Image 1 (cartoon, helix red, strand yellow):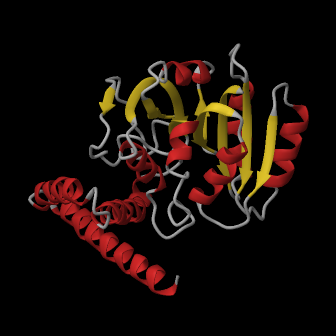
Image 2 (cartoon, one colour):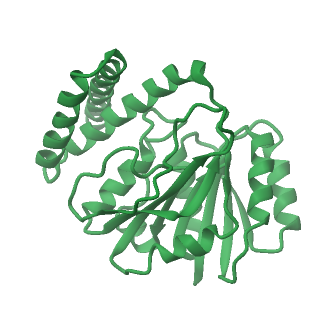
Length: 288
């Protein structure tokens, strides 16, 4: 089996993708590894970029298509075709460090670790400091415990294959392109409640070239807040995780509701997301 697979899903961002792939080409490792590229229904020249890169690459590259939108679906298409014992995920607007794969594998030296997040730094310091995690402090997430949103982010997350198998991968209803933007933390939490330890390791590092400025933040923050609410609701609806998530999410809402106006707006959108997800689950249950 391959030591590690790196999965990148992309949709209609071929110019960003070209820069991402340029950094992939600069990876320096002696590990056996492969790159999985998933086209999530692009209508621009992304397919041509992917095929050309695969043809010229000096390492194994598998190009896949997932026509149905949603990052959860695209991630599932990628990891299920991968051969790596460890499977890493990053985005098409992220640049991995040359030692990324070695550092990612190091984070799984302990066989009890099933999921891990890595460091995410801004590529352009003029971008708004959002969707990053520049902490240099390692963290541990014990099994059967609450996983805080933002601690591990989809731009740099890594799983042991067996952990993904245990949880049947990502939720197709979640992620950018789907209704709720929380596929990353949802998968980590389900792995934790399947008995796996988790970690945040600052070693495996990516630079996030998201290009967002202050004017873009309101809409993005609302999307993430709705996603956090959906994430909380999903685990509140599960009998085995209900008590943990009612307590943890309730404490979070109580703290933020006493904060400044932006924090109170975030609380409102989280509650909105929780209600939307609950209605979504009720509809799915009635029609299935």
